[in-house]
Figure 1 (spheres, helix red, strand yellow):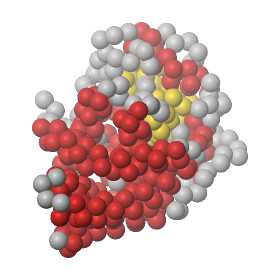
Figure 2 (cartoon, helix red, strand yellow):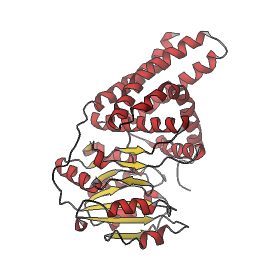
Figure 3 (cartoon, one colour):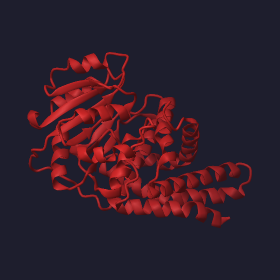
Figure 4 (cartoon, one colour):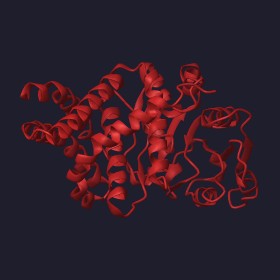
Amino acid sequence: MVWLVLIFTVPYCIILMAIYRGLKRIVYFEPRQQSDRFVSVLIPCRNEQKNLPYILGDLALQHYPENLYEVIVIDDNSDDSTYDIAASFEPVRNLRVIKNSGLGKKDAISAGICAACGDLILTTDADCRVGSRWIGTVALFSHSTEANLIVCPVTIMPARGFWGRFCELEFMSLQGVTAGSVLLGSGIMCNGANLAFDKQAWLDSRYSLHPEIASGDDVFLLHSIKKGGQVAWLESQEAMATTRREPSVREFMRQRSRWLSKARTYDDVFTVIAGVATFATVLFQAVTFIAACFNHTFMYIYILAVVLKSVPDGLILRNVTQRYGRQPLMRWFLPSQVVYPFYVIAVAAKAFMLPGKRG
C-alpha cells in the first residue's frame, strides 16, 4: 500500500520542493531613489461604493510626483454609486473615471489599458489598500529589470477563528507558490490585485487572454508573457497590497471556484502538471481518510500521505509567514492540512459546474 502513497504524493512533493528552492532566491528590493517613469494605475470595479474611497485615499497620498502617474477607475456596469463617488473624488487630481462598454473585469481592464497614457500599467482592486510608496517602488523596480510583467505581493486582512486562519494560510500558500514559481522561471499564477506590466506586452498578448472566458485576466497574461518575455517577482513591503477576505464561507468558495474554473483552458505545461499533481494528492488524502473511518489499516496510509505532503507545504508556509510577519499562523498548519483536501475537492466540484465561457 505504501507504493500508492509514493505514486500520488511524490510528484507533488518534487514540484513543491522546486518551488521552495525558488523562494530561497528572493532578494528584498529597497528603493533608494526615484523613478521618472509615467505609471497608469487601473482600478476595475463593480458595485464598490463602500470600498473605493479607501483605495483612492491611499492613491491620493502617494509619495510620487502627481505629473508622473494617473489613476483610471473603470466602472463595470455598477448599479450603485460607484461611478459618482469616483467621479467626485477630488483628492486624486490626476483621476479619470470611465465606463466599461463591455461586461466583466477582463473587458474593464481592456478599456482602461486603451485609455491609459502610461507605458507601465499597474492594476489593483477597489477593495485593496496600498502604502504611500506603492507606485514609486514598482516604478523604480521596473527600471532595475527588463521584466515585461512584475508580480507584486498581496496579503489578506487577518480574521479570527479557525476559518479566518485557514483562509489566511491558504492565501499565503498561494503567495508562496506564486513567488517561488516566478523565481524558478516557471510562473504558475499571479494576482491582478497587484500586478504591473508593459502596455505593449499586454497589447502583444491580448489575443491570448481568452476573451470568451470572463475571468483569468491575470494568469492568462502571465502564461502568455512568459513564453517570450521576462517575468519578475518584486519582494518589498512598500510594494505590497492588502486585500479583503470574502465575508462569508459561501462567497469565499464561490470566488475560489471562479478562479479554478478557468484552469480547464490552461495550455502552460508546468501549470497543468502542478495542478494535476496537487489534485491527485489531495484526492488520495481525502479517500484514505474516509477509508480509515471504516478500516483502521488505512489510517497508517493516510498519516504517511499527510506527513509527506506537509513537508514542502510547511517549508513554503514557514517562508511566507516569516516574510510577512505572521509566524503565529503556523500553529494552525496541521489542522488546516486535515481540512484542506476536502476544501479543494469542494472548490473543484463547484468549479466544474461553472460555465467555462461567457454567456
